[in-house]
Length: 182
Length: 182
Length: 266
Image (cartoon, rainbow over all chains, first blue to last red; front, side, top):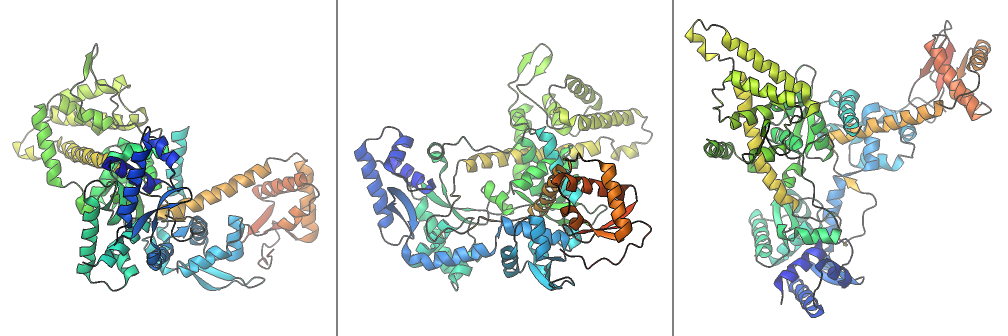
């Protein structure tokens, strides 16, 4: 058995986004006798199949890939839940930045600036407690008015809203880029 | 040793998009005695460290993650069909190391140490998320204050800022260089 | 990226094997990122004790390099000159007769020496970090979610304060650009349109500009009317008030009392 080959296969399967098929393996590895490849793959599979492992190499979709074992699904879901909670989507970031700089502001005003409906983003920001509802605007329909929260300041390590980077500061940084390109 | 726990940790580290730290592990797992957690982690690390493997669990950026080994770099690049990853420019690296050792620090302070304006470097480091703005300094003009990020640690394979090259280490190298040229 | 010059530092630290050429010390592809970089290089080249720098010698060498220009990062020229000025200043200080030995403590070079020592440490830290970087760049991690649960809807990001501010200001820039492109299309007589708008204001007292704008027959006319509004405001003929971004703009003739707005939401 070729241990070197087995290690490389492990790496390739680990890194590949899609199930890695034999053609691709050969393309990367160059000349490899079929029997050797088979032997290395089988050995790799059985290594991971042996008890007590959390992840495994499986054959699926015409190739090999790493997956977690079904019995650990609940743990996986809990972790993903937690990671999701601490991150923002780029749409949410956009919405949050508008609220930060334009508060107090209504949903319609945010949507007007972004050019897309922002209801969903607001909901997710509210859930993350990065923004809060502070009342209603005296305007037709009495829309809700949003502000950033204490948690928002904490999240970004700010003492107060005055500490938000000013346009000139960011502009200066962005400016430099233009010069570098031209 | 708790094999079940080890398997779950393997899964969690495998799934996590960033280095998985102990706090998150505990958040997912609920009540786990510290010693048990340590034992399981150590056992997992040594499993992967033992010879002939292509992937390994490493401690970096304050947590645990899976990576490939350096000797397999070429195979990964052949699979993904990409060139060698680009290094930081020396200007950016200089700026970054100044921030690392002097944080929290302002743009003006960095530029003073380097003797050149560092705005552009800050921008590129911010965009690479190797540094972050952490507020303002209570000083004339209230300049923004910078710190290195979690990603900085991960980028250099450091587990914490304590892993930065120590002053004595630097002094020793300087001494050796002095001997070498005189 | 373009502005950053690769590896000045590494080549410097391994430099002794430089090739001598006609005009003296020629180093392969050596470009000095900053003035301190160059100074340290000169000090090492001449095997000078950093704590006792012969300022006259170093100043001469330094200026020589500045004249060559091909070895310094020209974007940084002003900063190189600043240190040149400092060197000359220190030199002049040292030429002054030293009356009392007691003042020996304030060596005019001290500040510069401190800076060089600090910078030297930075450079060493950089070489160590560079090694770590090189090793890390050979290690790959997965950047995607393995096939466990169904993939999450949108990519989620770790955001920083910089991201927050950058996102906002870029968004505003984009908006601004869109508006500017729109204004360009004017071709209908501005004077006529201005008169028309003034006439409208005289009879109606004020106007809801967005309403007026969208009431125009052609897009071109609408654009001209917007352009006219800017002109009228600039010439202090009218007052325009916009309460919130992208909400309607209310316009009054000057003189008339600019108040009573607030109920105009689209």
